[in-house]
Image (tube, rainbow, N blue to C red; front, side, top):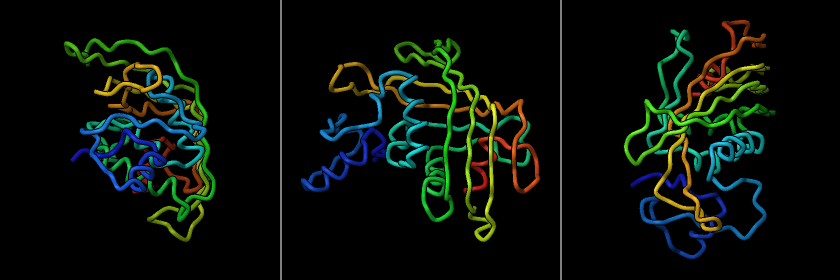
Length: 214
């Protein structure tokens, strides 16, 4: 059974209340009646703005809804002490720690979004893949980590760059009829600015922060 990554938390609660359930392969998107700060997942820009909202609101279900089943996070190439990539299960496990209250006291992120372009090298017939650069990333986190639960960490990532790849899912947005997109790949390209790391170790990256919350 596939993950229910296409549904907001309110929709899942509604299904539970009605006594019905279905996998993400059996059900399409569900409309929400409550005011929703998250945008329709019909463009790469909207997905990245939803990623920002999910981080700042610490909404794991909404973050989950952005990721394709085949999602891969790729660490910065020169981070030789860290494994090469994360799959979707590892990514969500890490963010359960980052978004939860057990470890993290404060969390915020901001960034700029470039224009999407078709990645011809990743695109197959009938399966277009778009890529987008995220620049000027400013990520701040204050809290403890699973491996240092009694030590408060102050982490700040400054002016980092990330690259994302998106493709269409099998669903359409009920309001606009436009195809819903999902995030299939995220590569950490690192930072050219100063990074702050209270451990005083190697320069901080988004992947390095994720690695602290495994």
